[in-house]
Length: 185
View 1 (cartoon, rainbow, N blue to C red):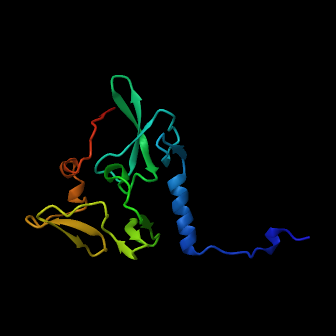
View 2 (spheres, helix red, strand yellow):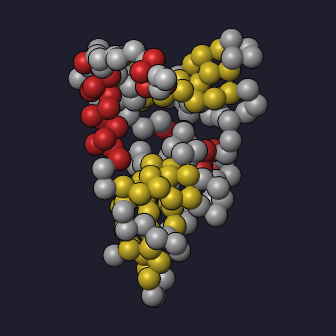
């Protein structure tokens, strides 16, 4: 009698697959899974515990785990990946119906950056522009640099910058986002 394992072909991983597995191992080493009261799942520091809170800080590309301590202060536990809070659902709300976020990452890419795309398969649309965002403020446009990365350019100063000018506290407050101040130790 042959087992299922005997019927499987032996496969060798490609260099790209091995690189991908090394990257995943690096992302998950010394991390623990967690879930929030709102139903979000995440991967955070090993010492994450019940009662910690997941925070989105404007300007950071990851969520932060904070632990409440006496005197209305918070201790930083560490960074975390929290699914659903990085595309920036925490600030802009859920994507409109039919839209999904797709992340792509190439281990051969020397910049080691994720490429974010917004896809609506029903309408056959794919864009780098978040469908939740409004028009750029006056005096701003988008340019793509030599590495294919998008930057926002202030037309007056010709200064290029990574953060989207719509994601400043002033612009977000104007759109109704509420902010909270934390005293960190």
